[in-house]
Length: 329
Image (cartoon, rainbow, N blue to C red; front, side, top):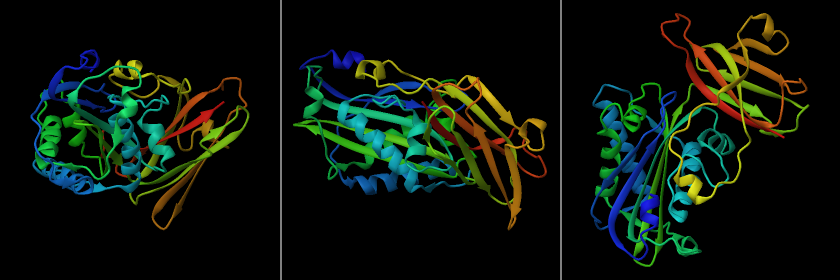
């Protein structure tokens, strides 16, 4: 993308950029070119068409369909709107937030994994203030061919650079939110897409999402029947900071934080007084309290990962069903 921004007043055909995340594997970046077909679908219809293509690709390998998720779509739209308007591609936004935090702030209660895409058509212009002239066009139309090209670009990747494909084909995904945005400046336009895939196996909430060192917070949840809590993990990273377009263009992959603060296992001595579990109508419910007055706590963005297992322990690895973020300042 940086080389396109340097190409002032130079006509270029549509160029597509793709970005994805599949935890714990780093995301991939790919480039493809396409022509500029005439639009024919409303943005709402284009989202439904993309959902049908995602499920077509999943069903081709015997996987269950995913259903549309309103909360994930809201988070995806906020991100695709900003990418289209400002002309960047990244898992971060200009506030420095990654998908987990954006999804949580939108009200998400599951675990999110993101695919991203942007296309440009028209004149490249990196003059100061040029992006201010790009305006979102919610009434824009998008062709089926555009949506076909985005999904096929994701799905037809080849190993080892197949992060988008593996995200689409993750058997644990149950929902997806599709953000799809168009921004225009005269004859030039940008199309941005954010696919927010969700693990939804119950409902997990954190309260509050922002607090000061010394305050406590809780994460509570209700798991789908048949699932049992495996562990609740807490990780730390630096607080998000505003990012310039240049910084955003230089990003590629993202992953979970590297600094583990604590792990609570059911019935472990360390969990006493912090983690409680009960049964309610065939569902396991839990409540996990974290106290930030310890000397090990410091300002930062804390991630709580909720892992589950089946009663038969048939899974080789536990399933992550939620990622909650809490800002501690």
